[in-house]
Length: 128
Image (cartoon, rainbow, N blue to C red; front, top):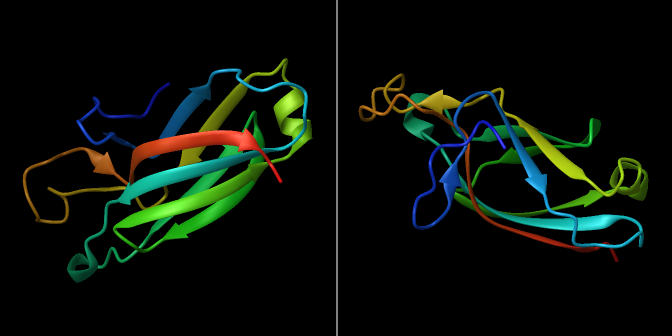
């Protein structure tokens, strides 16, 4: 796991242009997975940052580009079975944040972390 700030009581912020997350193997060989994320989103509309773009990959395969424009967002992503089962049951998620920004760069407050999303929760279940 890399590209994340230290945990806070509610979750953890991404920090930088890329973050990775390893998901423990808690499923069988049943096929595709549904991932449900609850995100906080770092936005500064008055400074021109009205949305965050997040590119999601799993085990090296591109999954989706998300455009998050609410301060809190629940998002669902399906990981195809070929990406789930093709790497010995391991699931490594990669998030690319081309619009990550720091509050200090934007003149908001003195925080140099390059924020994009705050991960509040992640649920993994078989895809419908």
